[in-house]
Length: 375
Image (cartoon, rainbow, N blue to C red; front, side, top):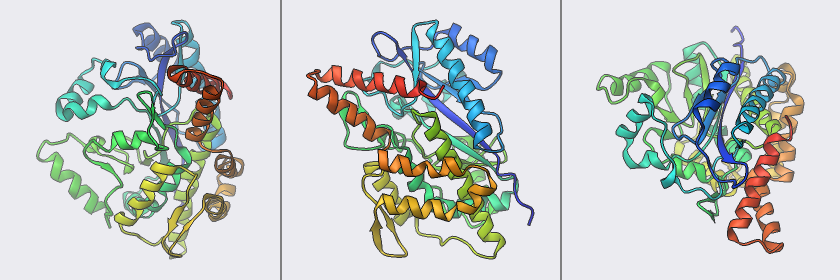
């Protein structure tokens, strides 16, 4: 079997904040125009006016993705500064109220508002998506079914949204709680073939309930626009290097599953109910509590889980030239995800005597610093 390209592409959504007040701010038309002129199709508005989205080119590996992502982040930051704005890459703004955020006036977003009603107004959340190049449709369906097992692992490592509207939610990823209110979200169904998937999509498009599969927002889906599998479960990362670690893990996991297939092996398929329990644990705890190993029938702590994960894809990381990025997953576990770092900043500000708003402002300032640390 010919090996797929396993190229990667990364999409990230950012929030724009006022440099002085640290509150959310709308993207001026001049900012979007300047970014579009420089980035040539790699930047776009999002549903809310305080959001901006970027997407890398098709990249062979994490090193190539690093250069393009750094260029994109730097350009957004540079042009935002002209308007006294600054981007942050966290899945929720710690203080902002979704009810006061205006929607971007574009037909696509107006149609979403009409179709989804009040729940879409709460989408003051940002994520990151990783595309992995797999051209063969049958293989895409097979890998999607197996890769679902690892979606909670990727979510746990990515968690960056503990705060919502000025309160600690107790969650590591509150973004998931908000996003799951939309239809056609969550873990993907376990289609056995591409034809099963295509038939299910056609059942909705034939009724004009959705125009195409781009309106299906599962945690993992075949991309409608590209010959890729698109992983969508992850929170966006304040640190560029952590984005690359998650992208490398996603890329290597897809290759590992293909490698098993070539050797006439495969990953065991578990019921969505069981994977959903691990998804909840990841959403709630990040990497502070373990995930269930269903083969061993026990909860495995994250220091052990990350070692298993790195070992599992060691061969693939070598082939794809991303060993350093994959191994950095250990640092995420030992040092904590963004959710843990944000809470640590909050507690430090509290100990220093800051009031409730001051503590959250300290968190936003921390997110600004992390966004720019690797640029």
